[in-house]
Image 1: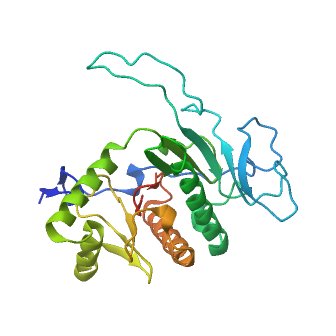
Image 2 (image 1 turned 120 degrees about the vertical axis):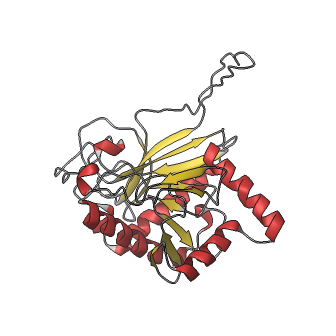
Length: 285
């Protein structure tokens, strides 16, 4: 029976139709990547300059022996040097597109996928994410940091290579801002964190829990906005992914890999977009 569900983390109502059903063919499949891509070591293709990297001791910037690295995004959707622009009229305001935009190349091998990476390497990727988010958030004037992985060309991927892109901007995100406001109102009314409260109820109900371990829980949100939307939440309260404890990252890597493998098995490697924000501890796929 179709029904409306109120989003606990926002003001929206979501229309769900459980009987409608979906087939794997409704999403398409991401084909295997070629052996090399423009992001591969020693590639001659022009990409942005290296900003940071994980590589062996004694190596140097630009060397091909990196394990993970951050590059300036060649598209540069925002500028690190804001320019003066007209503010516009009262109803049509505008401002210079200032901020920071980079690509995080997660593995030297273009054929690797998140779900095939060894846990040790994926843990290293998550640690690198955390560091890059924290550094971006500390930039002057930044109000929102977002890290997104586009997997498959249908999901907006530019490269056939495991990578993420990080965007830091001086304006707030509408959906995160709404979640923060609703969570603040919940805390004022009930004296506890909304995310922790919902997670507690979901674990007790066991209706929407996808999988879990000692540190994290993956669940389908009560008012999902997209098919197969999945949240990963920490069992212990935290306000930002950049403050996640290092000793929990292997558990996060294991759970994240398990969730992606399950989605791939059910939907035959669909394109997808997981996102992590600098102001929330949840990962959404």
